Length: 203
Image 1 (tube, helix red, strand yellow):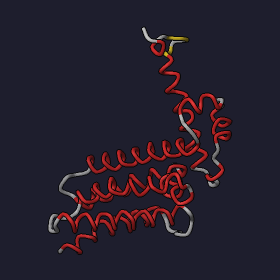
Image 2 (cartoon, one colour):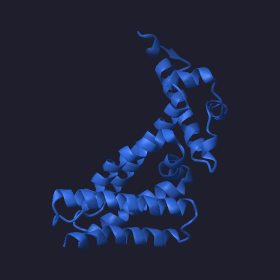
Image 3 (cartoon, one colour):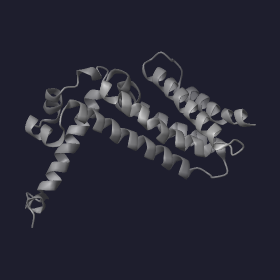
């Protein structure tokens, strides 16, 4: 039996390590996703998670590595939410699929504003995320590309999807930071119109 597999108080060392890492990630999300996300520090994360710096450095090399891990986990969650929303909608009903995807994403970033701030606002203020945000664009653009009309070639579809992801991200960012003052329903409806309207580019 390895050291990590031995149990203590009903849990293994590996389980306790995983639990501490999740505590740190949860605290990172709360602090990074606050209105003053720039205040995140190793000391603040340890204080919020009630863990010592020893456990922080057991999991992350520094503050930037934690920030990147929080962002990557949330980007993966957003991708999964979008995939599940589209999969649950009728395959032959593009408006319903578009609305399902937009609604699911809006719920993710607005019902828990921390997540919206991390996904959309944090990359603007944290150099550690500037590259991560750019690297994630193709992942989300691929989801959009798969929903576009087949009337265009692959290059046109890729360019349209990338432009659409950028436009939607700017809309959501403006909504989150308060510069766009509309209702949630109107935001969703407008985004759905944008998604469906791009087919006109390929007609």
